[in-house]
Length: 327
Image (tube, rainbow, N blue to C red; front, side, top):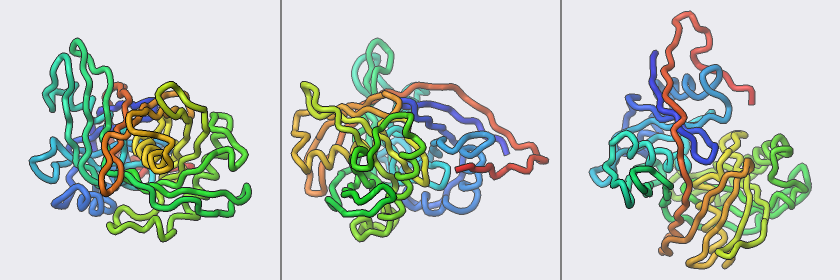
C-alpha cells in the first residue's frame, strides 16, 4: 500500500487530499455509503489515524463528479468515518484545484470551482490578485434551522440547544450556558461536553432528515458572544464533530449553520457579515448570499495554504496497518 497526498490547512484545520482511491456509486452520496466499508475505509484509517495521522486529522478522496456540471467530487473523511459536508475542506480543494491547474484561473479575478459533496453541490470561489490566491469563498447548500430551544440535561446542568442544518446537522449553544469559554485551556472539557451533547441529541426527531444519509447530529458548536463589529455580529466558536474531533478552524459548514441560525433570529441581516473566530484565533467571514424556500445560502470566506506533499507506504511487517486512536 502506497499513497501520495497533498496536505493543506484552512485556518489551521488540516485537509489531506488523496487521488486514485477506487470508489463505487453513481453519485458522491452513493460513493460515501459504499466507502464506509471495504478498501476506501481501510485507506481512510491508514492515512488518518496514528501513526501516519492523528485523532484530529481530516481529508478527502477525489472522485468523479455526479455529472458534467461539477469539476470533481470528494468524499470527506475523519477519524471515525466519512462526513456529508466540509467547508474548510471545500476551501482547500478550491485553492488546490487552481494551484495544480485542474481548474483554470485568472491572475486577477475569480475562479469558480464546482464540487459535488455528499450533501449536494457546492462552490469554492477562488479569489486571485497578481497570480496569487488571496482568499476562497465557500458557497454552501441551503442551510436552515431544524429546532430551537431544545431542553437538555447535561453533566453541567440543563441547557437549551438549537439544531441547525448546514450540510450536516449541528447542535449549537452558548459555551457560557455550560460555565465555559471557547479558549484552549478549556479544550478537554469542551470536547467532553461536545460529545455528550452530540450523542444525547443524535436521535432527536428534528435531526432525522428526509435523506437518512444526512440524519443524526454531526457535531456540537459551542459559541462565545463577542459583541458586534461595524459590519455585524462577532462570535468565537469551537466545533466538536464526529466523536470528539476538534475543528481548529471556525468550521466551514458549522459557520454556515451559524449563518442560518442568526438569519432566523434576525441577528444577521442581509448585507451584514458574521465575523467568526476559532478556538485558536483564526477567522472566517460569512454572509447570507441568498434566501430560498429551503433556507439561506451561506457564503463563508477564508484562506487555505499548502503544507506539503507526503508519500506513505506500508511495511508488510507493520502490525499497525489499520492505525489506532486514543480518543
